Image (cartoon, rainbow, N blue to C red; front, side, top):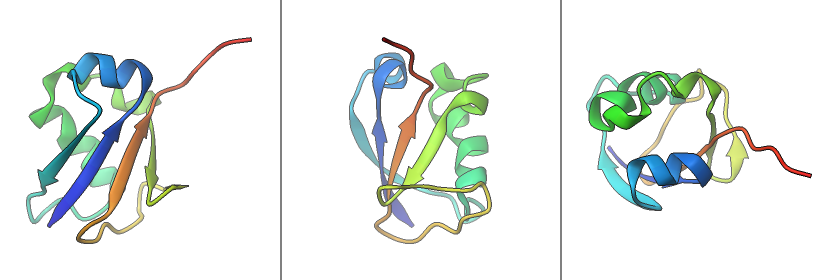
Length: 82
């Protein structure tokens, strides 16, 4: 299954791009699976996914939310500001 992954803020800086199309392995079926698998493809995210929220098709997703072909997934790190 192919999905588009959007990277925001510090996550974008770490991976060096704003978005990419990824072909997911067959065992990546949920957003939780994606969070566990992504550091294998993007080692710069290792140890950081625990604080990153994932949105699926413009709505925050739970870890058990099923993925589907063509989904747009946004990785949103915690932000601070004032």
